[in-house]
Length: 403
Image (cartoon, rainbow, N blue to C red):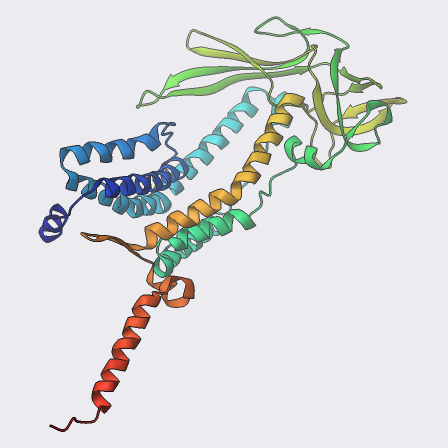
């Protein structure tokens, strides 16, 4: 260790080397950000990516060689941080979140039985299967790291993201991509998507803002703080109350039967008092356009829009929320190839043997890449070796010179 320290302190650190280290620090910061937010569930904030470059600049002005020690330490910390997160932190946090979710669901069902039908059922997990899947992923992670260095885990993550599909139940944001928006007058029976303004039939009064509305979702939460001072909310009361209403477009209107209706991305109205938070989401009559997905049917010789038992959906959301969601998905799809390219490039840099000498910086790819892929082979070294062998052969087979 002392020899390594002395070797680093003898290095000539130039401005160009500092700029290269700052670029590498951003790559390392990206991996650390993914580890802390994904595995440790820590919100680092948007200024996190400025911390490492600033730290290296400060170290550079204290002692230029300290900058090399700093970037090396940040790089080395990546592997144990990921290992600790995958093996211990992430499984522990996952178990705690699942237990908390189950407790909240049971608490809501206990508070009001009439609203139990709106609660998502708690899926029982096969712990043996979950453990085997975790162990398999860990084995793949370390196996890929042993073979390809940092290239392996990045390839594993990229491939997992590309081939995996979220197999959850149907929801509005997924279905609205495939369902055409029907005019209310000509909507076909069955699962359908319609769009229009809310028209109140029998008005209610909301609990928080006293708004005239067709219905509301109301809840009371108790405010507490954990040992770190972070605020926690625990639901102690909830209430759903909806009356039938109409959705109207330029072609007509249709009656909505609001049993099991789900409100998505509605404005929140709330206030705090005596250590409690009172919140409501209101289904009000206004100038906004709303998108609904449910089942079009006939009831008492009248067309109605109701809960679809097959797809398990009757949802309503402002059209602006759908537009923002689709726009975000569009930009993400456009950025995905660049993100993958950046990850693979970063993995190549982190997997390579980077050496700083007085003559410059040399980058030697990971031994697996240089051995198996022609593009990464050192052609110059091969030519020099071949020339050396030819010179040796000439020396061996050369005829003696007569004096």
